[in-house]
Amino acid sequence: MPTSAAVRSVLIPAAGLGTRMLPATKAIPKELLTLVDRPIIQYGVEEAVRAGIRRVVLVTNPGNTLTASHFAPAPALEAALNASGKADLLADVRKLTDLADVTTVHQPEPLGLGHAVLCGRDAVGNAPFAVLLPDDVIDAEPPALGRMLDVFAELDGPVLLVERVPHAAVDRYGIIAAEPIGDGVFRVTDLVEKPPVPDAPSDLAIIGRYVLTPDVFDILEATERGAGGEIQLTDGLRRLLQTRPIFACALHGTRLDAGNRSGFLRATIHFAARQPALAADLREALDSVTETATGG
Ligand code: UTP
Image (cartoon, rainbow, N blue to C red; front, side, top):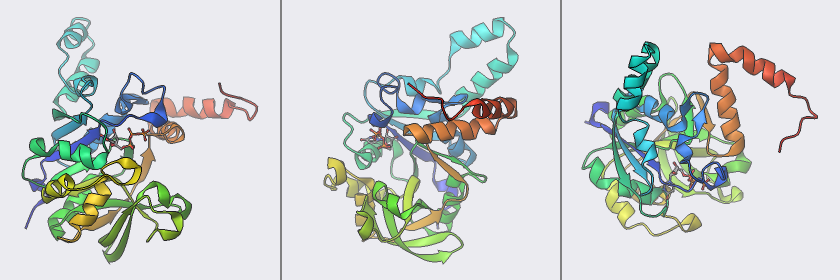
C-alpha cells in the first residue's frame, strides 16, 4: 500500500512557447510572469511544498536558466540586503531559496506535455511522482495536491484533478468519463484530449495536477503525436488505463488559468484582493475604471 509520503518529486513542465501571452513571453518565460508579488511558478511550488513535496523537477527549454534561478541562492543580493539592514526582505529571499530543491531538465523541443513529462524520467526515477502545470494556479485549503496524495495513498493508482467546466468549453481540455466512487472521487473509465463538444463523454475536465506512477514513462515513450501534432499526456493516460485503474479527484477551491490574457488578469485581481495591504487600492482602481475607458 503506497503512502502519500512515497511521492517525493513534483515535475513542473515549463518548456512550452507561451504563445497566448506573446509578446510578454518573448524573452521572459511564461511561468515567471508576476501575479501581484511573485512569479506564477512560485504559487505552484508553494502548493507542492504545503502538500509535503520539496523536490522539484523543472522541465524547461534548453535556453532557460532564469526559471531555476528564481529558487537559487542570491549571495550578492543577500549581502546587499544584510548591509542595508533590510532584515525582513533578507528573510523573504532566504525563505524562497530554502523553499525547494530544484533540479532542471531540458526538453529540446516543445513536442507536447506528454513529451515534457517523459523528459523528466531519469530525474524522477522509478517512483510515483506528481505533475503540476504552473499556469493552473489553485487557491485551495488544504492544497489541491495534498488531497490528491491522500487519494493516491488510499486507492493505490494514478490520480487526476478534475473540474466541471461549461459544456461549450470541453473542446479546450482533456475530458474524462468516470463513475463516482466517493465524496468527490471518481474512477476514470475513459479519457479524451480536446473532444469536439458533441462527443465529450462528460463536462469533467482534467486540470493541471496529476499523481502518476512510473509505468507511465514506458507508455509515453510509445505514444504517437496526437491533437495539435503533440505527444499528449492524456493519450498516454488513456493507454495506461488499459493496464491499471486511474482515479480522479474533484477540485475544491478556485482554479485560475494564468496562461491566457483574461485568466491572467483575473488571477492578478484574485490574489491582489487576498492581500489586505492592496485590497482597498484594488477596489478603488476598479471603481474608477469607467465603461468609456479603452485600452491600447
Ligand atoms: P500550455 O499549452 O498551457 O503552454 O502547456 P504553452 O504551450 O506554453 O502555451 P501556449 O498554448 O503556446 O500559449 C501547459 C504546460 O506544459 C508546458 C508549458 O510550459 C505549460 O507549463 N509544456 C507544454 C511543456 O513543458 N512542453 C511542451 O511541449 C508543451
